[in-house]
Length: 207
Length: 111
Image (tube, rainbow over all chains, first blue to last red):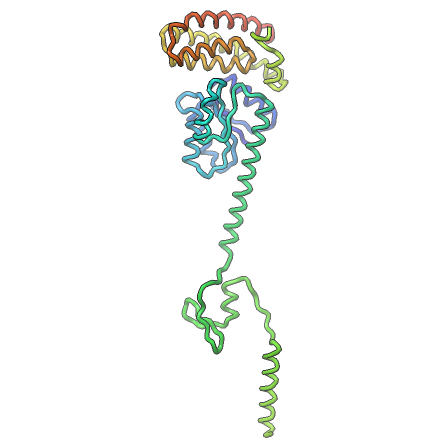
């Protein structure tokens, strides 16, 4: 799992990134919000967890969240804001800016682990949903549609297609669906046919 | 004294990684004097925004080091900056200086 750590303070960034590496995450560290934004925009196709310090020069953590949600509304990104204890009152504004969660600095390792697990659960759920949507879109593209009002000859049962040609009902349906036909004769038609053959034979024999 | 530096809390914070602890202590010993000088310059100039950002940075790194007293002093200075109470800052800075001196001495024993 890819994790981005954005913090301009190197001690905070080192403790956080090394903790994540102990847990075998693939960690990238950046030291300001603009760089974090560039990295996340480049990662738009990959599920990514980002831990962003709120107070960074130029582009702060909340602004990074806002821009990510605005510019990549469908990207699978779980964004966590880091705030100081005194800044906890900004939590609502942070979540409103598009963050999924927040952590108070200095993070508690057990709490960080638990919250990251929540983030990974959300990311994998979104990933599976996106895959399912993709599969459904593929399936939909392959489905042949059979609907609407069909002009049918009431005598020979041919159907007139959009091309104005009259075709046999079975070839009309076969072209437009995955149905296949096996040909046979139903009992009422079989007895009708037998009767016709009998009549024909009698006629020839002059009965 | 755990208020100045709490080795047990620091060990827990760093997941029991001794190399990481050594790296962080080294970084702090390198960065701290410069941070305090940034704070001093901001206090001298009466520059509240600069005081907020420099005190905030020191507060953050002291917090990861489990250095509660320096963290609290830096937080006090950050708050003074936010509240534009720059006339109270020199007295608070003197208290920070004393705490930092004690912390650096303590950290030298742990490097």
